[in-house]
Image (cartoon, rainbow, N blue to C red; front, side):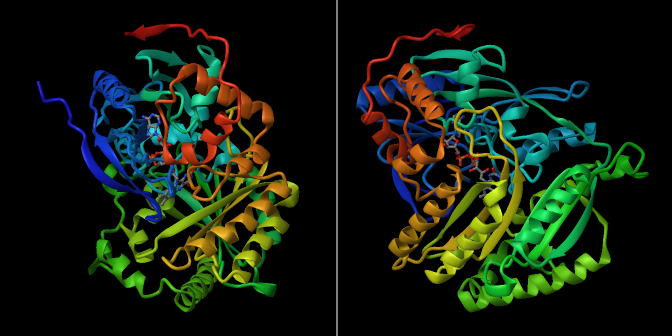
Length: 492
Ligand SMILES: Cc1cc2nc3c(=O)[nH]c(=O)nc-3n(C[C@H](O)[C@H](O)[C@H](O)COP(=O)(O)OP(=O)(O)OC[C@H]3O[C@@H](n4cnc5c(N)ncnc54)[C@H](O)[C@@H]3O)c2cc1C
């Protein structure tokens, strides 16, 4: 029997390296060990936060002066049914570990983010999306069931029909209602280890979304990349990639392409330089002139690439482009980066996205990376998705320029909120309580706050993001709420 994990006091950084907090980090391996942490935190009068792979750009997985549950060691695959495609995992299991377990049986995850280091717990808590949000919905829409440990020690099972209200609130609930201890996930059947990919050059945002509209019916995935360094008549220029799953029989070599060895990302640049060194080279380009050059070169090579037409690419290579260069974010040091991802209804997206980029240029903080995607609404209480499009912008933060970036972001928020849009907690560093009150339907927000009080009356579960945005909203509301009942409780 191994010893219980002991908390260690550590400085923990946000993924974007802008925020940092000191926490007592504990790595539980069992539900009982999480209960022990709840008890210890109560004893000391401090909070508990959850952390998966730590891939949230801002302060979503930090908790200053609290216990931080780091789930990376609670990562076992509990059950795999290759006939039904159902996978049950512990919360610290990563997207990488999941597809590596199932692909050779012909199953891939229906929803994956841009990095495979994300865990199931983190993906559920943020209800993440992929390049196919318009087609297969969000991560949460493919969760068949989960076990949630409440702060009073009860372990409850939630499904779309059992404890439905909590199911809809805990998915996308920022880890604030309880701790996911296991997740059952519906995988997607694939008949090849390859996707068919088609690139298109686009000259503007307008052209991008016209193209998205035209391609949507025949696409399994759609994503746009834009040169965020240019304005005027070039504003929005870039590339769109449409990808499609191959149907049964379309890949004569499926038995080979489904093998894990076919999915390895290249480890060396031009076969020589280890990819893990590349971030240091990138560092020289992480300034306005350097990024103007990099974006212009990508636009130029993208046009040539688009002219060549359709090609086939391995799933991992298509989805996890950002994992090609491990540690690339270090090129943003010493200040780090934030990401601003705006979700805007269809009718306003072109104009709002153009204004966002222009606004960033006017403030002297142009986005070094701009990505667009197509989204659709989902049933989850605190979801970020709307019937429209998103624009994600990576913005460099310098130590001296931090307050200027935050001031710029306030103006960007206004543009998004005025258009009925939303921002995304997984990427957020800048939202204020008033932003959430304007962005989310009032009824949803009130139900979420009520559930927080009912399921975690002592507010044991907190993160820095929760303290920044939701705590002031809770404090402004009366505390008395009627008790609530949950079915199928198990455990203590
Ligand atoms: C390079 C890169 C690309 C990305 N691409 C995308 C993308 O395409 N689409 C997208 O939607 N997102 C994307 N993201 C964001 C990322 O998917 C989310 O931030 C995700 O939540 C991170 O998961 P994680 O395991 O790292 O969790 P963390 O970032 O550590 O935590 C995220 C949240 O989950 C909570 N949490 C973690 N474990 C548990 C648990 N067991 N129980 C309850 N709560 C828990 C934490 O408290 C926190 O609130 C990207 C991030 C990066 C760095």
